[in-house]
Image (cartoon, rainbow, N blue to C red):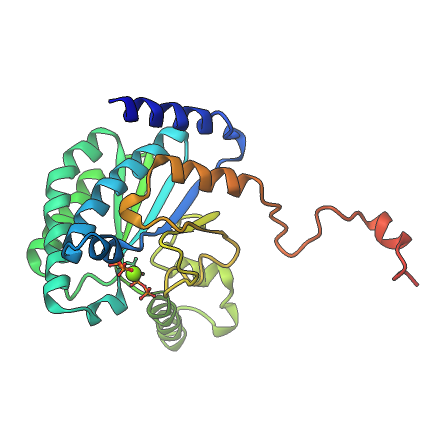
Length: 267
Ligand code: IPE
Ligand code: IPE
Ligand code: MG
C-alpha cells in the first residue's frame, strides 16, 4: 500500500514533465526479456510471458490516457517459430485466452484492435477470435492498438515487391509509377503513420526484423529493464527522453544558412 503510494507519486512527478504538445502519436515497442525475467527467478519462461501481458495492459492504458493515438507491439516474430514447440504453443494459447478475456473491455474503451502479420499458420480458434475482435472494434476511433504476430519486416517488404510486380505485369500499374507512396499503400501498416518512437526493452540493441520500412526515421529508446518489469514509470521516462531529441530528418536544425556562410568552409 505504501509502495503503491510512492509509485503513484513518482509517476505523477514524471507525468508533469511531459509536454502534451510534443507527444509521439505512434509508439512501437519490442517487448523483450520475458524469458530472462523468469529464468532469473528460477521459473519456467512461460511465467515471464504471462507477466508480460499485465505490463502490456498497463502500457496500453498509459499511452491512451496520455493522448497518444497508436501503439504497435511486437508479440511474435517470423523467427520465433524457431523456439521449442512447447513455448510456441504456450504463446499461441496465451494470445487466444488474453484476447477472449480482454476484447470486451478494449471495445468499451473505444480501442480499435488490428493484427499485423501472416495469420495463416495459426490454428483456426486463434484466427477466429482475431477476426471477430477486429470486426467488433473496427469502427472504434479513440485509439489504435496493433499487435504484430508472425510478423517480419523483410517478409513484409518482399510481399509488397511481389504485389507491385504482379500489378505491373497485369498492366494495373506502370512500373515507372512505383514510388514511396505506392509502396506504402501495399504495406501491412497501410494508412497508419510511421512510429515516431521505438522502445525496446531488455537492453538489446537491435531491430530483430521489426517494421524495417516504417522505422526509417523513428527515435530509438533502449531500456535495460526486462519487459515483465517495465511499467508506467519506465514508459514515461522513454517519452521524456524522446521529447529531448532534436529530430532533424537529415536537415540541420541548429545551424542557419547565415552561420554556414560565415564559417571557415565558405568559399
Ligand atoms: C519477448 O521475450 C517475447 C517474445 C519474443 C514472444 P523473450 O521470450 O524473447 O525473452 P528473452 O529475450 O528470451 O529474455
Ligand atoms: C523480438 O524479440 C521479437 C519479439 C519481441 C516478439 P526476440 O527475442 O525474438 O529477438 P532476438 O532473438 O533477441 O533478436
Ligand atoms: Mg528475446
